[in-house]
Length: 273
Length: 335
Image (tube, each protein chain N blue to C red):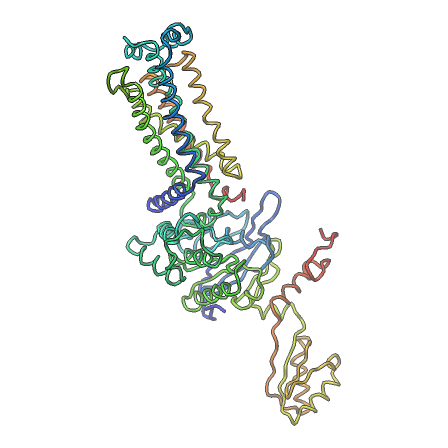
């Protein structure tokens, strides 16, 4: 494996992404809205919820009651509005956060495979000594590392927001908990891998970056299902389930990567030109 | 013309193909090509757009796999040993294929690393190439802002960053203004003659091919129509050519009288002591010279005007598709 060449290609891809507003804008705007603006707004709104409504709204009550004991313990002594806020920020936003690594890796992978073809820069790259596997690996690693970086920065921002919004109610910093740490360092990298693997599989079958990133959006579906399941009280992402969820996704990633390396031929990338 | 000498032909060929064929779902892009390219040669691939030139390069460099047939390039199998082979080849793709958001220096540095140029040599080699291709002043500007000629020079610099033994140049002067095109042609001559690299030049510019190539292969619909030096092809395919004969002033009248007796040669032009025969069968030239000598004409020189590649190209075209007119527009029934 020619790691120097792989690193060179990764650097090229990451430099290109950094200097491309069409790719950078969604990478900045979406995480900021999803993970900073939305939770801050919702959290504050829940806090300001009149006590009477918070206590009487049966759906909210039901939701709070369905939370596992560990989360409920955190909320002992909190007002109705504060309980809803903490439930949202610490618990309900878990699946939302997973959208970030998935989307970032999918967008960068789409740019790296299909965007490169659109910009007509691919041909020269295919004529370099990189083997098919090195080419695929370099392109996957660049999307993956970028996704991890964005995910980590987003997590730091989210931690700041959650602690700031909940400070008064909780009397000090209380975030992240174990589930979130597992989420960021175990599940998010696996989810980023899933997003990019699916996009890479799609990439050799579509013509434009737009098509690739739209189709790549399909991978968000399992996250939406997870979100609904959690709201319905079917699943709760505590540390154990988070650990298992991560393991399942890693297994899927490994399978997709194996399939990708086995089937990827550089000429497939040319075929759609 | 390239660096090829007779001795180059004794060396193992830089490229050897046997019945190289590539089919796509709905067409045969390269159809049973069999040819050798000698080391140090400038070898032209001639043909219209879609004739199969770019696909041939992709096959030879292991970017595409052949459907059937074999190729050996610099001793490597392009498919099985593609990575090793591509370390020794440089490609100027039809589109410059540059990262426009990166600077010239970044583009070259990254490609030097992709081609495994030793780390200690990268910076020096990049600077030397920027200097050689007159890009030093703009080295740290994004390539997207370059003129077409600069981009082409930049792409050529990139193709040379690892000092390849074999260079593929796909339409290197397409879309360039005459000055920029001339610069690129001079570079090709330099790369071949001074540096001894083997160059495969894809072009549909016949004048360019004639100026630069030792041998040319003419392609149409993926098939080889002809292969040889421009003059060999001319002799073979364009039967009639112009000949200029310089005779002594005293024997000029003698010569002109002789021509009157040779059928088909009444239409000669005279310029001082030179007699020009605008169209004569190539096979008939020795006979004409012998007849002039027999009647006592003093011949100082005989110059044949080589047919241009353009003549050859159209001759081939007519041969391949007799139903097409000279401008190459296909008649409906030929479809």
